Image (cartoon, rainbow, N blue to C red; front, side, top):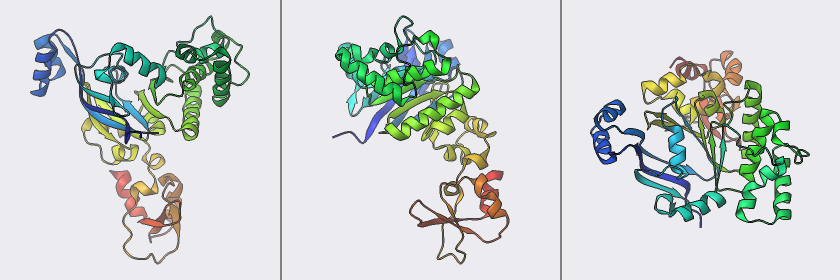
Length: 339
């Protein structure tokens, strides 16, 4: 039976340098990154990080350059060993595994998609996609069939006999995505995979990932420095600063209730009316509504604002089954947007 969470991190630290124990002691006493570096020569890359990721969830880790997000994903995959803490994949602690056991987990249960595609230029697209399956020892015919199947899923049907240099940047990233999906991983890592792409291609790839996730329900940890991308892709978002997590929450939670000034700075320019939904703004329904007008809980504030502006009375907010779950009026919307 699968664990309740796909991935669980508890008290994860990563210290680079020769005096990790002293650096940990200083960090726990409240010393800053700069003070620790000055006092020990060590850099705290990941600072006491704890979170879990549910099966089928897209969990986004975001922050500015140097915030520790790429170090964190390397720790999760155990490409970089942690200094302290545990990382469990489906209930098994990766930090206690031998190197050979880790290689097996990375081969069979994890896949990674990077900013730089990392495709093998001398291999056809089909063989690039099948590479992980080859490493697993799958027979040539079987891995070719699987690779063709996944190429079709990512919209590259008919491109298997081409070479990577014959493809556009967006198409090459689709090959990288197909290669990651081919091994049917439990956990997918994306380390700023779209940041090198042109804006229009980047948007297309984001839409493609959303489509694939709706279809395949993979567990994803996605790294980005772009809050707009985080909002679009993430079920939950963790914001990192100086190796530590400032706040974890849904996009609506981060926007309406930022826990720190740092989080508030990220969210201040977000078009709230486009991001927030009626469910994010609604108030409790006390008794039956007199007016039968209603809006869907999933409707954006932007889409329902015209209807709210022409009436003073509240409207019912209904879920996917048509059940009233709250009420909303223009005053409730105004309070949230002003905040």
